[in-house]
Image (cartoon, rainbow, N blue to C red; front, side):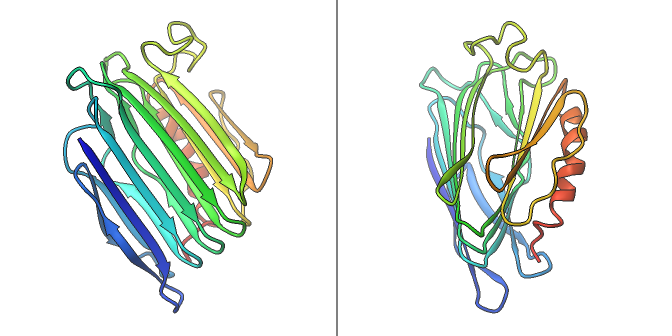
Length: 249
């Protein structure tokens, strides 16, 4: 299956935000679901079909123009499935945020079901003066299930300079997966990156989490846990606090 989705948020010239483009194909269906105080727009990603399955090629493009404010959520976790014998499934996410624009990317976790083979490529470009809150959570297998194979490649640039670059491979074939070199025995990992002119301080986190300022206008927080509940317990409080200076107001 090949599918593409695209959302373009623009300022309406009156302090609000309008969606100039909102289109998608199953399983990447987009639905406008709210207008937070201050004129921002909330869009949910709706899974219109099972997957991604092996062989699927999916692409999601997000564009936030000057002065626009967009929040991207999902109605449920994404479940990568094995499917028929085929090349790895692939999701490519690109996002751009113009000066004065705000993007909050807060989807539900990706779950790597046993037998899946899935690549996620993320490229985010934020212009100087733009604001970003980007969260990714990954769960290695369903309940009492071995993890499938997922490779995630994320690059976030700010003002044309790399702010955050991270590659993660889990499941069969991942280097060090049979030992403790990847997640140290954990089955879930979450990462939050905040970037822009108004940043929260690095959070106070527990033993299985870490936070730091990035070499640029950015802050990173990441957590590992036995399940997604532990990850959320570590990251949700800071992520919620980060929404105040990054609010759609």
